[in-house]
Amino acid sequence: MLVACLVQVTVLRLCTVRSGTENWGQEATLNSKSHIQDLGIRNKNQSDLVIIYHLETAGQGRDRIFRATQYACMLLRYLLENKPGTEKVILKLKRLESNMSSGRKLFRLGNMVHAIEASRAAVKISDSFLCYCLTAANVNRFFYFTCDTILWARSVGLVTDISMEKWGIRATKCYYYSLLFSLARDVYEILRCMEKESKELKHDGRDTGYVNGPNSKPNRSLRKVLEQFVLALCLSLKNHPPVLLDTLKNLCDLFSPLDSLNIYQTNQGFIGFCGLVSSIVGILTLAKPLLKLK
Image (cartoon, rainbow, N blue to C red; front, side, top):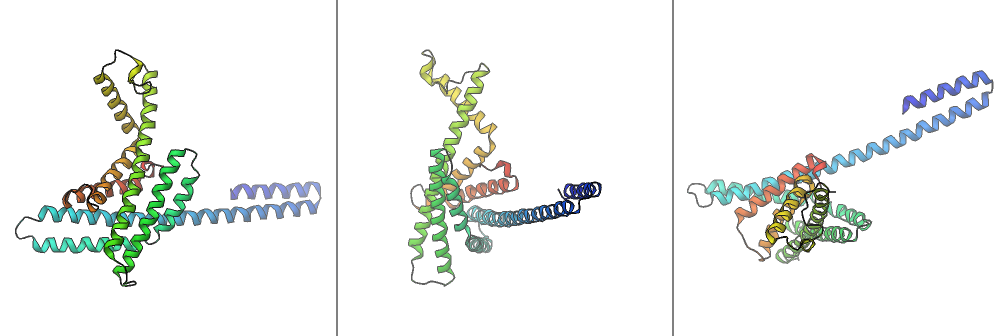
């Protein structure tokens, strides 16, 4: 762009010499300089956006590495729990897990702003179901981060007159509701992908029976319908990796609040394994943004 502007300035100067009109040449030169200044301001703004993006990405990457370490320690503690002579190792793992959790709370202090911005962006989505699910999920994330910030302030002694248990339950509920709305969005995306795959298969002469429903052919058996449904589902997940990864991540994250709220109790080993898988998926989508569900 800068080279093109310099070429324009040179051409205008040549035109000035040939025509002998100095005023026109001066005005053209001033216009070109102002255009170059505008380009400089635009490039500066783009540079600022790039810097902000890299800072946000670095913060997310740090949080996900800490999260993976936290759940890896939880899984290792569970595996070493009943083995003799591992008391010191278990104690160190528990201490490291606690430090990772505290560090993540500190890094999440500014996430309330991102949740608000995400909610404002979700309201503008034309699809009503996606708009509702994403807005509700981000609003619950905002309340979750608010409760998490209060818990952090209580843990470092900034406030003392609140109950850690009550605010912990509130934070877990907000996180749980956010995951439910995110999973509803994932199911909606999967159904859309299945409909698309079914239409393509029907166009190729391989009717899945999903678009028209099982009543489209009276002689179609239930087994055949289920086989075609599973085929459309597998093709949808295979051809749309972002949907698959986001669904896997949200499903893995769901077991932690289910256990904390006594809805479906498991054990620390299973929660640690699911959290580790979810963290690895998060790191993968951060390293390759094309794998992140938009």
